[in-house]
Length: 166
Image 1 (spheres, one colour):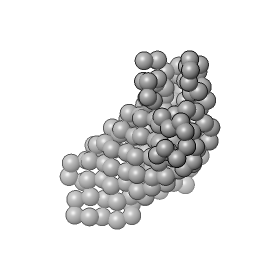
Image 2: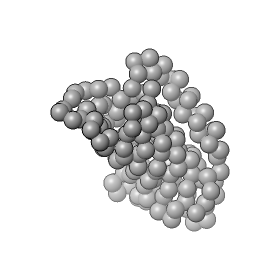
Image 3: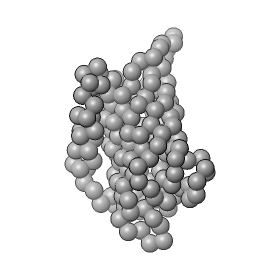
């Protein structure tokens, strides 16, 4: 497993820069900033940061449905022999998120477009799926981005992130 070549401070700085670009949404609250690590098929890892606006759409007995509009940035991995993973990729996306209010279960799905291209993220559209748990403002999320084999290669990115909601 390759160690991410970018520092945690750089990832956090990117997330803060993305968040500050959406100050009106931040003022309305429900903005989530996340950072963590992403892995592709041969466990090549790199840093990842994201920001999303999560306005409430509706409520159920023990759950909340939210819209999710955001961007995920996956750092390039530098030279990986036999693989094109050097470039950074940013995926802008929109979707829905289901959040349980009793046990914290979080599920989401969205569709988006990318800027940049690698063997892991190789063409639009990109589908973003999320599963995790939320405790008050903190969430631990497992996310996957893939184009569902619409373009080759289709290796996808799977990430584990810690998130904070404002």
